[in-house]
Image 1 (cartoon, rainbow, N blue to C red):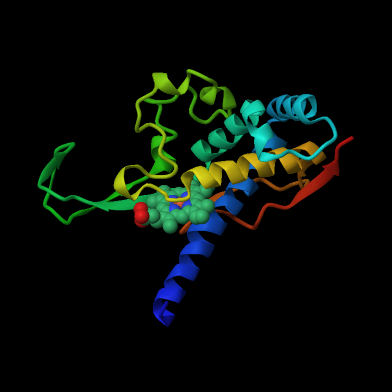
Image 2 (cartoon, rainbow, N blue to C red):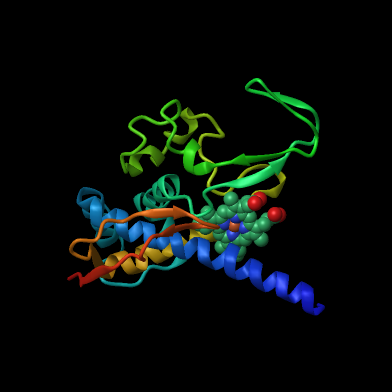
Length: 205
Ligand code: HEM
């Protein structure tokens, strides 16, 4: 691998592979702190399935609500809030004519909050991802990992990693927002918390 390819690969791994999942975790702890009923249901699932031991990958299939929490976090705070695709042939899109090569910005952040696809889109509700609920939706209503040929290559890995992280840390800790802090997000390369996310971590059990 030459120097420039090595540089490109390193940037991809840190930016695409690390920062996205890290931001997703930040949003998860903030969402749980702000939605105590969801946090209570999550803790109930973790306590009943794991008791006082650490989760393994084998446990994940018995922790469906934990994954629903991750998916709902990626709906409201998609770490990659937008991406760009080029038209490959002439197309008329909502009254606008696009020539081949025209870049089009697609924004999961907006699709995921569009009232045509989501009831009460601003509400944090992991039950939107309960078994069967996803089949009833438009297939493109949810695209935190993009779609098509250039879909995120780390899609499944990232969900597995996040599922395991929420199970491991959620079992042990109960996060609270630092007094006076109101979470705010900025659309940068990734969806970034403005001023960080100061939190207090309470140990459970
Ligand atoms: C929550 C976590 C993640 C989110 C929300 C996410 C989202 C996305 C999105 C939307 C794209 C398409 C970007 C574009 O076409 O401009 C993408 C591409 C990509 N992602 Fe992820 N990603 C995540 C985690 C990961 C992880 C963990 C890895 C690697 C281990 C990874 C590696 C990549 C790579 C290499 C691409 C480029 C694929 C290509 O163009 O063929 N991502 N990701």
